[in-house]
Image (cartoon, rainbow, N blue to C red):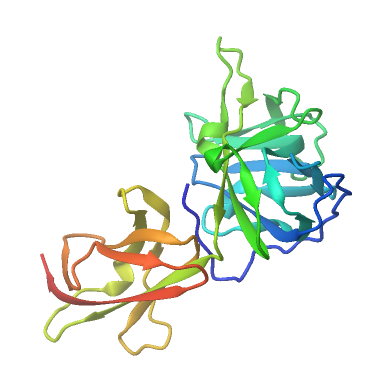
Length: 295
């Protein structure tokens, strides 16, 4: 799953603990693990990650300080789960998360919501929460959860690496079969090595004689295969100069398409939207649209 930056440089920067390694490799690499979430149809999806480990080349403990996060806040940003950990260079076969608690809040048919939790007294629950039923978490607090790595392994070489980990909420929680009313956590978490994340800035203005309220227009991204990336962003004109803007941050290096979606009708633009744009490691690209007609 492709990732993206938010308007902040980072949502949270967290101190980490680095364990000893017996791999005997003298060279080291600085490793950052960023966590994000693909959008999902939930009101809340909170997890407590108590430990993060690398397996292979001797093994490294990257984090032992528990962190509790609502994954839905990561749909348009990333969080530094591990920041600049100095680890022995080498090939690592697995990244594992130890998850010690979680809850989800889901919408019922009548519009109300219900909470399902790993425990009725899970510390991550909001004050006054009423737990409707259990959220099963098979052995994730003991053996840990394996993160699927691109190409099956993570090769750490060079000065710096960033591993983007996508905790896909929509695929990671589901009803237990048999109509018991329970929910089961079966996480789908994918990790892919990326360069330094960049961004895409979008500006939109009207050609002479064209009338449309650009405040009702959203900018959105897809990947090169037309799969949606993140959520649409409304255009705004903060300084009142008639040029509206939207920004996509924490964008992983790669190829994207920028689209403009009005509240009604269609827009003819120069350049034509969807417009292809390529983001390089650490770079920010600007796409400047002029609306030439409204249909």
